[in-house]
Amino acid sequence: MPAERPAMESTEASAVESTEAPAVESVEPPAAGEPPSRSKRADAQRNRQTVLTAAAEVFATSGVDAPIRRIAARAGVGMATIYRHFPTRADLVTAVYRHQIEACAEAGPSLLASAGSPLDALRQWIDLFVDFLVTKHGLADALQSDTDRFAALHAYFLDRLLPVCAQLLDAAAEAGEIRPGTQPYELMRGIGNLCIGRDDDPRYDPRRLIALLLQGLQRPQTS
View 1 (cartoon, helix red, strand yellow):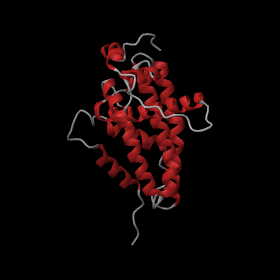
View 2 (tube, rainbow, N blue to C red; view 1 turned 180 degrees about the vertical axis):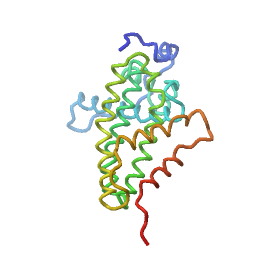
View 3 (spheres, rainbow, N blue to C red; view 1 turned 45 degrees about the horizontal axis):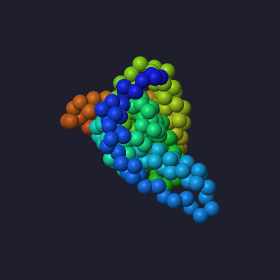
View 4 (cartoon, rainbow, N blue to C red; view 1 turned 30 degrees about the horizontal axis):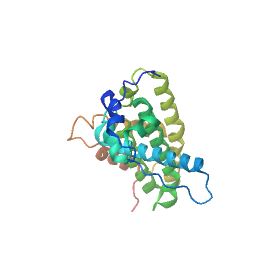
């Protein structure tokens, strides 16, 4: 991992002390009977989660090279807070990537329990997966030459999401809604390939082709 901090905006980093007022973030007083140190840890964790959510939203619309000040504004925190949690852009992008993986993994069982059918759950999960792939765009460039970190993230991605996709596919197949035999890796890889080029061509909407792909998985309706 690079020791220097060139991946973050140097002009923004140098301006943190001069532009950020100490009262930018409001810290709630500790609850009655709650130790101050525990309250501070809870505040720090909430700030971290808020930053990750805001960064994912900004990355989805502006890419991973979006200005840090834009993420701070979306999160409602000072830039120093972001640098404190994530000293480099690679640290921030990696944390957002893992945060999105967890959100996507946790959504699978929840959708199976709440959706009208396993096929509906699969469709909704794939929508979330596509949103995640949009955030992932530019990850390799942001991590620069840190191939070990990239490889570890890719392994984590597969370990967490392949079982979820398999669970959704199995449920839809058992319900008779899709043909059996679709491999989760093939489906995820195919969806990922369909998303390539989305940012370079405003005329291209991968979701339309992904919808056709899902139609092809469905069993023909018997009259």
